[in-house]
Length: 164
Image (cartoon, rainbow, N blue to C red; front, side):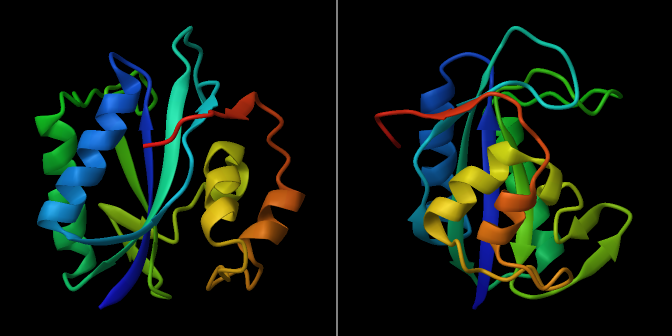
């Protein structure tokens, strides 16, 4: 079993429902959801939009390989209305990123783990630090809490009262 961390985000439609459905589908198809953070609202990162994101981080246990996990997650995104465009940063019903796959370092054309932008994204680090502040980045050898403290991203983010 691999200890995997995923980031979920949605900024179109019923954002909260998309996160809930994704979590249910992950549990049914991929592995046990061990922990899930609260839901956070954040400004779009990397592009301009009036649609703010709902974000959440999940810790799951799964017994499939990383590329099979990626394929399953992309299928869930597709089923929940995700459309892929040439531009990487666009509004979307659901986005699921693999942040960490155990302590593995993966560098393939279709998948890079640890996620290459995790240190730059407060909307990932805040919810991550809620569920696993002492998880150590296998390359940087810093905890998630330390990465959050060093993060230069000052964009808007707030923890919502109700969680999925």
